[in-house]
Image 1 (cartoon, rainbow, N blue to C red):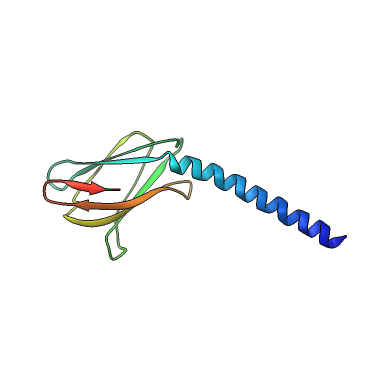
Image 2: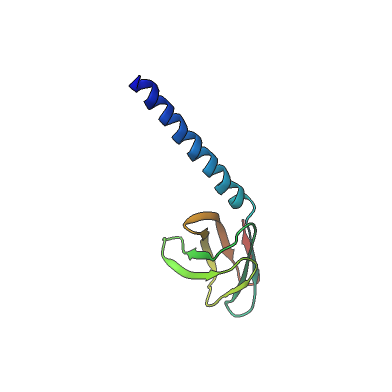
Length: 114
């Protein structure tokens, strides 16, 4: 009897975890981060998607050092200052849930990102 109760409890926990993960992945899959180069070391960032609360944006250098941290609401334009040429990793979070991450490459006259 105990084994059946234990097995049923485990299945209920797994089902609950899978259903909440699907909800998180749905929001994360719909998040778009747009970068556009401004002038003199400035980069404009806009985050779009199914996000409703404050979004945190982190920008790291290849060594893992935090270069920029900012908080905004969805669809607001953020301007990052003093961004030098190089490679960066960006991460966007809403309530400690990662919505989007990727690479940002900053060149003299353009930027590339995924």
